[in-house]
Image (cartoon, rainbow, N blue to C red; front, side, top):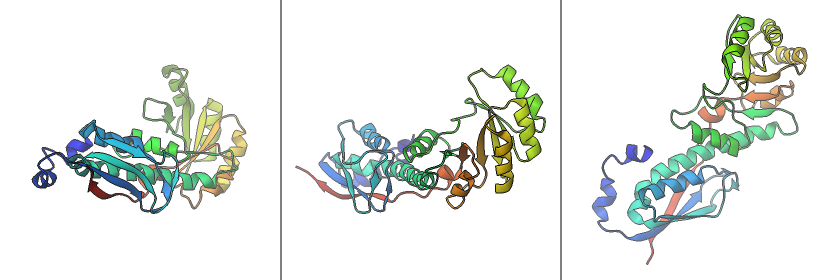
Length: 263
């Protein structure tokens, strides 16, 4: 679908200046330091256009890459290399940017018990790629979609948990979002599996974690950034979820360079 978006009928520029197949190769170059992710998607773009295209990689997903590093070579019909370039790079840059940002936040949590989670705040139709990139960067996935778990946002927590227990399969966990200590206490009494501490002050969060005392898993959510992640982990929560991992990560600058024919 992404290729169809970029090439509705033909790549008119490439076809205008190159009428016949000619073999060529182009180098995949990293233009800034980061974590690479999405190489398999990058490769798939070119093989969808022409299965005979070959992608030789010198790095693998999750590797740290440096500015100026040659990460691979793509060989095939020059027309295919030109037509697939932008779509392939769009995926690779976006996924690598998410992995890079995730790694930078995950490093701040090293030495704590807290795991870094993503959210459903993903680009439409890009969720599978963006959540993969989070894992590649050292984070963990929250529920993939609305079918994966129960997340209750209700003032009548006890009744809502009871209804969820009746309806949901026993393998689905029940999470309750709370904003006050009173809601935390009600969630514990109702038997919630996970209690989300949403937009709480650090002091309130510590008090909530102490009160829960292992009777449910704890998740901190709301305005989580690199600047406050370590401080939030120090409160003792089991998980920190951050929408910024997918909706605010800048791309990693990557280019295809030095295109030339090969005989």
